[in-house]
Image (tube, rainbow, N blue to C red; front, side, top):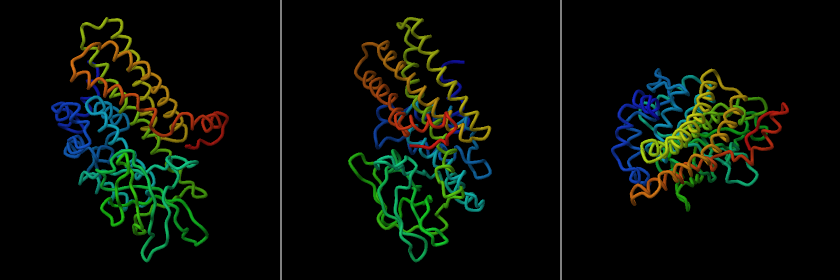
Length: 365
């Protein structure tokens, strides 16, 4: 089987026509903010990739989804990274919502209408964990009214629904507790802007009670309930960046001027990294727990290091290219090294992972 053939075959099976459509568009056009990638993804049924077939989704396993993200990353890295956030949000909804009628309504609504869901992270706030609530709320006539600023890291301008953490009044009236709020992107008071274009501001946005997901974990530990979703995030983000690096390796493998020893060396390293990620996918498919999240972090940081070796060597082997090819190689190289920028940063997880190794709980910094 040729390099990336398995991943592209999986994508073709679950999202028919998407790989061909992406291949037909020049890379740098796909990577433009106004590029056609997101709409091609919608048209192929991509938003429903992880939704069960009973909810009109594709019913992909974690292993399937990993391979799809690698295939997407090899064609359009920015699309792969953006859609990873959507898939993480879907996995989070599936894990957190215990009311079956509400779960069915939301997940089937996303899958059947090809809507995109974004998750607002909190890592921009000093001292806040990446999964900490980023919004404040006041009691309203019907539900709560929330305000605050978050960043989706992608999808801000394409999302149909935003999931964000918020501190809300407890139902027993004794203080506050963390919850997730589901906010329609076209709600009054929602705006998108900021220097990087990914800042989402909520200004006194009304959220009805049925769109608030309260924690069921002991002592309102919302992060405990998010661990399964965050293992998905690590897995699929790793696959997306392996795809971007794979696009460079593929170019080297097709270059007869590159020494065979160097081609095999790159192939061995990047396929070894993918095999490690596939191991995490199988763990998730078997039923994720805290150890799965820990393992997903180990593998993500391991792959990160592998890409630091693979990417510059692939660029060097590709040598002197014409301007178009050079632009593409430069873009892919820059993008492939971006895994280190995804949460949680390794230096922030040093303490939590060290504590976990001596039988402490695993927290996301």
